Amino acid sequence: MVRVGGILKIAALVFAFLLAVFLAFQLLDINMDFNLNSVISRSMPANEASTKPLKYKCGMSKLCPAGHWAFKMASGAASVVGPRICLDDKLVMSGVKNNVGRGINIALINGKTGDLINTASFDMWGGDVAPLIKLVKEIEDGTIVMMASFDDAATKLNDEARKLIADLGSSIVSNLGFRDNWIFVGGKGIKTKSPFEQHIKNSAGTNKFEGWPEVLEMEGCVPQRQD
Image (cartoon, rainbow, N blue to C red; front, side, top):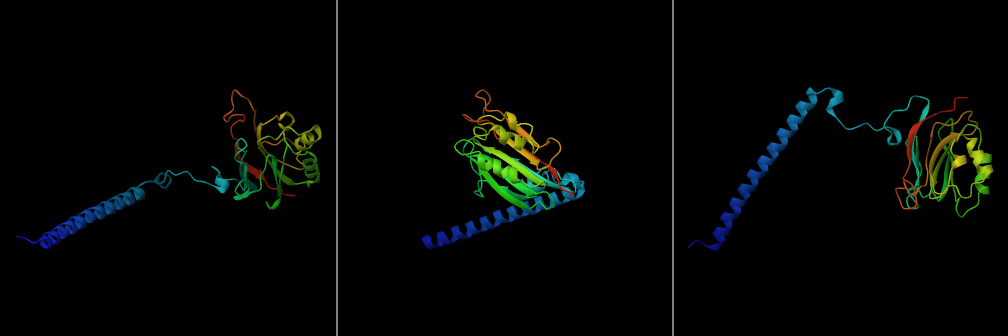
């Protein structure tokens, strides 16, 4: 009678042999796939070898021309997720940075260097509009001004505040309503209305969230100040 120990030894050897065969085939398959992919990549034109879309500064889908700052921004989502502002591949404002709040969120950027001057948020539901008016009045010429709504950006806005923001290039702030979503990039001393502005009304029939419209996103290239 064959001892139990002998049977176990034979079984272990068989198992080891089968495992070795399995690993050998796996390695052969990997090498074959790798070699085949390498051949295919070498035989394809460079622009077809990879289908992954290119991403540029701030995750943009396009490259900005020389003399421009790349930016990408998003409004807040309902009263839960704060807005996000990125300029020249630097995250300027976000919930992660803990520098956003309910109301109007503002980032001031040096138009020549792209350096961040200041960030601030102003509660337009339970706060006071006076600090917002003071900040906007003190902005120096040539400063890039980036604004994004979070929750409600309009209730405390008075005519003076709306006029000051309109002078920065906004076409929409005069009609901004309760819980509308809004994002805007303008500048102090701008002579025309800014092309960088988006707005969506708070409407029960079209809102994506209960009581709030969907998130707005915008990207673009802001000209650097040359003088």
